[in-house]
Amino acid sequence: MRILFGRHLAALGPITTLLLAASAVAQNLLPSSSNATQPTGLYASSQFDPAAASQPSNPPPQNSGNWWAGNAYDPGGGPDYLDAVCDGSPTHGVAIFVGYDTWRSISDGNWQNNGIHTGLNYGTRLGRFSDLTGIGFQIGGSVGAYNWSGTDYRLSHQDEAQPQGFITYGLFRRANENSNWNAAVVQDWMLNSNYGLFAANPTLSQWRGQVGYATNAFNEFGLWGAWRAMGDTRDVPGFGPVSWRSVNQISAFWHYKWGPGGADTSIWVGIPEHHRLTGDGSLGDYLVGLLANVPLSDRFLLYALITYMHPSAAPGPAGANEDAWNFSTGISFYPARNARTNTVAGQCWMPFLPVANNGYFVVDASQTYLSYSGTK
Image (cartoon, rainbow, N blue to C red; front, side, top):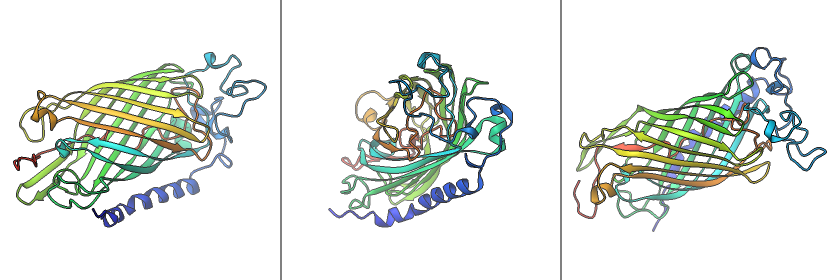
């Protein structure tokens, strides 16, 4: 079967242009680690001063078999003496990723999607504002292509793939010597083509935030949530107006660091909003998720994400059409050789929240249909 998604991927070209432009502007207009002036404010006398760091935060071993030996953030006693503070790092950084996705939302009925995604996530300090507040800026995006051989369940465009794009941007701050709090707020955009059962092209947006407290260098507890910003409605022949919107949700999480330079894992349990967009019945009962980031070297990191929303409907035809889940796995590349971090606070100016995907951006629809019965 033909794979006709070139014209849809072309529509996502502005995402790549936006990301490249943002990176170029930030690197040319914001102070770099080589020409930054002496900072003032909370980093003025800190050993974690990001403006003074000209090398990646994890230097090679010195006079020891342990990789953290000689690290400015190790007071001499090894990892047990690390504080819950972010690692000093260059004034900006980027992670480039590529991976595999399989996911299903309520808009897909009881079918699923499979494909490949790629993108980047960029973080930077904001000059004197960051010196005074510890707040940084992040922007990132991804593009994906799913169902390359087409589908047999859409109302139309069954011989075409499904392109999809995400954009995420916002502000963050990481734990430092003055505060153990991590926090971020971002806006996510989802751009679709051939989306769901109706092969529609809705554009959706949500806000996403996270706040956590690092009890020590290797444990953080907190809340993260998402709340919708913009839905979309399209006219579907034979069905009339169909609406899509993100699902409001909130979850409690535990983030654990498996030692300096080791893996980061996060697990969460939460609840979605109760009312469905259809106005008929409730949405999911609960949400669960697991995220793992495992450094393979100074430049490469393996990531995996699993999310699941359990339907409120009883097992059967209704329940089979109302759960939503996502599984993603892939490799991230860190050009600055800063894939490893010391603590749960990470690196001061690397992006804090991941680029959105179908695990963080759950979508509800006002109508679906069961293609095997021809009903809606």
